[in-house]
Image (tube, rainbow, N blue to C red; front, top):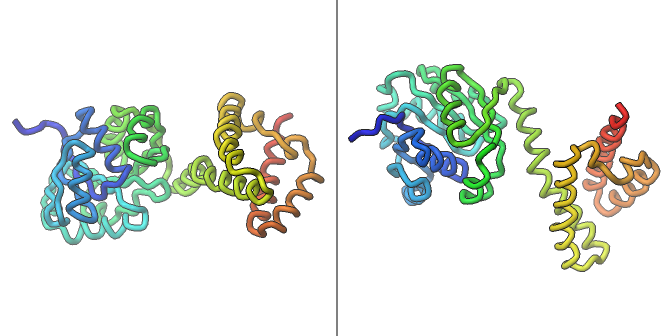
Amino acid sequence: MPSTLPNLNLVGAGRVGQTLAHRWHREHCFAIQDVLTTSLASAQAACGVIGAGRAVASAAALRTADVWMLAVPDAHIATTAQALAAGVANVAAAADAPVVFHCSGAQGSQSLAPLADRGWRVASAHCILSFANVATALQQFPGTPCALEGDASACAVLRPAFTAIGARCFDVASGDKLLYHAAAVFATNFLPVLQATAEDLWQSTGMPPELVTHLRATLLRNAVDNITRLGPQQALTGPAARGDTAAIARQCAAVAEWDAQTGEAYSALSALALRLAAGRGA
């Protein structure tokens, strides 16, 4: 018997696409239909992870669908939308204004303008989660915030679908997408950079490698626990928390001598730390 669920085509099926499609399939939100990636083999592998879907080798093989997810890299969103709008013959026959969305945090739904011009309902949906691998992401996903932006009717379709798989949806304005995503970069992407920098500095002073690894597992976890329990401001320690600008200046000079770019980062982050500390009495 044919499925009564809305069907979904997936274009691009990396960690994000596989995670979302797997959960939608498991929770009976969408009938996963066609999956297109960079090769037929990778599309077949993605279908295996998702547990559903038909791998296709080209855009021409994609059937019409109620919902389309473009889970491609940011740099390919606009060109993928253009290719779908211009090169897929059966897209023109799609009825009932299909919904198409991408998963970028930094780009808005305007990246899908070629499809919007064809009458499609366009949106973006970005989940604030580090999709390190699919197995981990599937476990961590429940409770994940999800920023929705775009046509109101498209968001009305996506909101219950994301909510059903455990996301906590909220609206973000198109003009705020860059700042919104920059915040996620600060919260997640820069943390490995800061940790790597700290470890390089420790190693340059002769700290034994096993102790560097130990600090990665203890000091970092304790800092995160303190932020979670106390909030960023109260968890702040070190010279900035004490208002010791002289110590900051000496350390900044030493770090800059070790590496100029790292010294600039130390100076900028110290200024932000002083500003954070100053707000404690507010």
